[in-house]
Amino acid sequence: MKATALLMTCLFLTTLTFTSCFTKNDPEPKPDPPSAWSLNGYWNRGDIVVYINGSEGAFYEINSGDWLRAMEQGFVTIGSLKFRYISRLKDDYYSGQELWNKHNGNTISEVTFSETGEFNLRNNGNTLYVNTKDPWSSGWNHMEYTRIYP
Image (cartoon, rainbow, N blue to C red):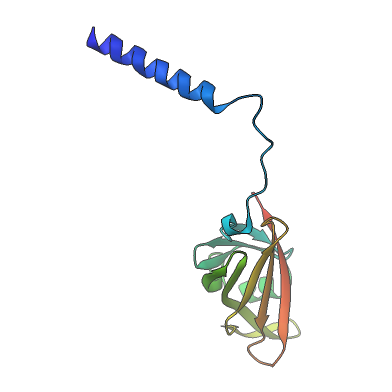
């Protein structure tokens, strides 16, 4: 008898909770504010896809270009870090380091991480801009990644 009463109470509470959560007057969902955006997820640059989780981002796919040559020549593999030391500065701004490759034509001679650069989320958290300094020169490079859901 106690088990039946407990079961009916649970069903009533579940039904009450469910019906109170959904009404016809609920407003349309709004995009999350920048403070809710996260870098975590899959990011496509065209030639590579990177998976970011917390303070690191690793190669998830390598499709073409210098990174494919770097993989073929044994410098990186799927799972190698592309980004490290990622930390949030404010809302949609982060800092971190990016792995670069040095090449002469089709030959990769070295890979190394940049100094700390800037990572910036835009477009409601669906576009990631990475701006890091070339480790071998004084130039900076700006790359754009698009969030994907594989």
